[in-house]
Amino acid sequence: MLLAESSRFHSQDLWTTIKERVSSSVSSSIHSLVGSVNSVIENRGGFAYLVGLLLVPSQFLSPKAAEANQFITKAAKNQDCKIQRFSLPVKGGDTSVKGIIYYPKNWDPTDRSRCVVYHNPNGVTVSEYFGVGGHLEWNPAELLKLAKCPIILYDYRGTGLSSENKCLSFFGFRPTYATIAEDGETVLARAMENFQSVSMVGSSLGGGVATVALERHLKSHPLDSKKVRLINHDSFSTTPKVIIPNWPRIANFLGWALGGLLDAETPMRSLVGRGIPITLLCHNKDPVIPSGARMAEFVETLPNKQNVSVIYSPNYGHADLSHDMVRKLNRI
Image (cartoon, rainbow, N blue to C red; front, side, top):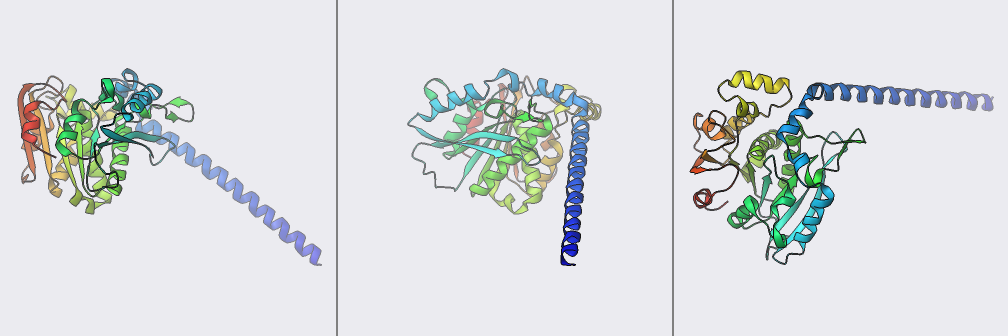
């Protein structure tokens, strides 16, 4: 009798295990299928990757991970600084964002009072900010002089230090405007966790990324609005307007249809409304971002913007912190 009962319970346990495994397998398959369908829709059947090739050219023009790491290793030997590498997993996948924290000379790495998070323009990666001798150059160097605190530099997935990411385990990762916003949000979240005050700075494409990432982060972490400021440098209101500035609605629709719409206009309106300290830097003679697409022009139309300051440069240029901008910016 006991043997029969034991056999019956064993059979029930076995059948339960089989059903659970089948259910788990089906659920996993459905989840994978839904994810694939969502990916196809989000990436517009592949058009978003093509747009990304044009608008995130650093994925094929800049040094890849192996060469980029050599630059960082050389820079780390510089006695004027300390460099700490990091790798942050991005939610919803098995990819990661890689970058560095650059500490100025004599900075105590345990000092977490403040930092700068810098978001790259579309044609540059972290390793290209280091010149002969491993010294920091260009915009990050200017920001370091102004802020006198650690600066966080990172590469969008598919570029530079983050170029070794794969899609579906074997395809090389291809960035889109959806993924670079996720990257910016990922890095910002970690900076907010580790530092008491964060200055978000982005040049050109990076200005759009910084704006979108900050607004997304504050939606879920509203109290962080007290510890952050935004510096948007030579950036756009929406990416399609850069191509078709005089037909904004048509431009934005086409950008959305092709998976190339990064809307920084809507989050900027929200950030202004939140009272976030915001500084906009804008070259009047910008050969890349035309009038009609410039973020500074858009912000000028907003009401109740007491928390916003706009610094214009009469000089010709794009995505470079010119001397007059640095002088007026004074400090971060």
